[in-house]
Image 1 (spheres, rainbow, N blue to C red):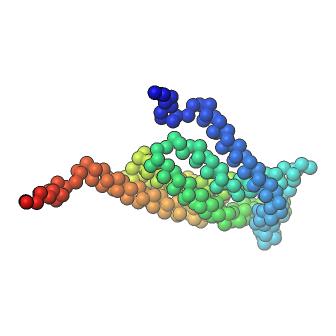
Image 2 (image 1 turned 180 degrees about the horizontal axis):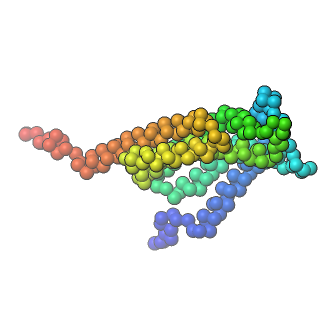
Image 3 (image 1 turned 60 degrees about the vertical axis):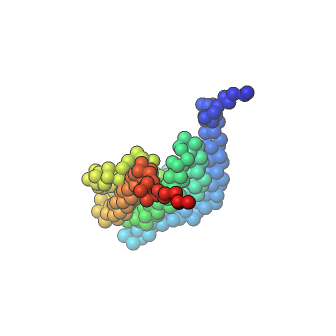
Length: 270
C-alpha cells in the first residue's frame, strides 16, 4: 500500500517562495497596467493637486506655485503621479494577492474573517483618504498663510506630491485600524472587554494620529479626524463584545449538551 508522503498538505519553503514570487509578479503586472492608465490621467490629477495652491494664492494674494527644480523633474513627477494612480486603481487586486498568499496559513473558520476584513478595509481606507482630500485645501491654506508678505512660496513638485500622498495614506490607514481590532477579536486574540478597558490609551493614540495626520496646528481638522475614529473604536468594541457573548453561549451549549429531562421520551407501552 502506498504511503502518503505529505498527509497534512504542507508546502515546503521552496513552494512558499514560488507562490510568493507568483503573487508579487501578478501584483507588479497589475500595478504596471494601472501606471500606464495613470500616465494618461496625469493632467487631470495634477490639476486637482495644485488647484488648492492656485486658488488660495489668488484669494489670499500670496505668490505660490508648484515648480520643477531641474530639467528631469517634470518627467520624474509624471512617473510618480502615474505610479500612485496605478497603485490606488489596482489596490483591490494586489490586496487580494496578499490575502491569497497568507490565507492558507489560517484555518477555514479564520479565512472567513480575513475575507470580511478585506471587504470592509478597502471602502474604509478610501473613505479615510477622501476625508483627507476634503480637508487638504485647509491644510494648504494654513501652511501658505505663514509666507511672509512680499515673499513667494516656490514649492517643489515632487515634494508636494509626496506630501499629499502621505496625508491621504495616514487618513486612510487610520480608518482601517478599528477593523484590525475586530479581526483580532474574531480570531480569539483580543477580547471585547480588553478593547473597552483600553479606552484611555486608545483616546491618546487617536489624538496622536489626529495630530500627526493634520500637518497644521488646526484643532478643527484634528477633531474632524478624531470623531469618526472614536466612533469606529467604540463600534469595534461593541461588535467584539457581541461576538464574545455569542462565542460564550455557543461554548456553553456544547458543554451542557441536550437537555435529557426534556428530550427523553419513554417507549410506548404495547
